[in-house]
Image (cartoon, rainbow, N blue to C red; front, side, top):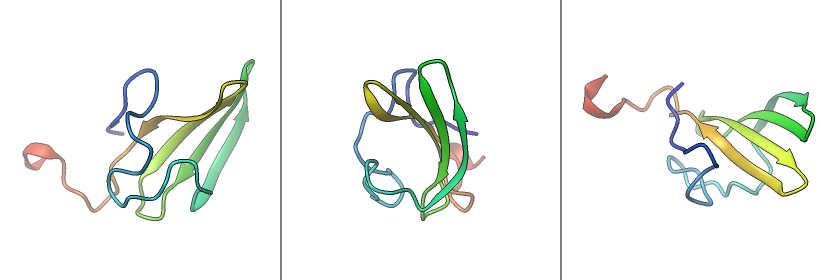
Length: 77
């Protein structure tokens, strides 16, 4: 998975591929896992981007996001 985020979460407030707001309801919840601090939720955006959302006392933040399957990587890879 190619991430568009840093270790502390996304830099924007919307999907960089389709513009869907990060704090809106995800298109699809893929899985949900309890953690010591809250939960980790894997979601898929409407454009196909897979997202990892950390949910804890600080709220929800996207900590990693992949490109949609049909978007070519930079440099043609």
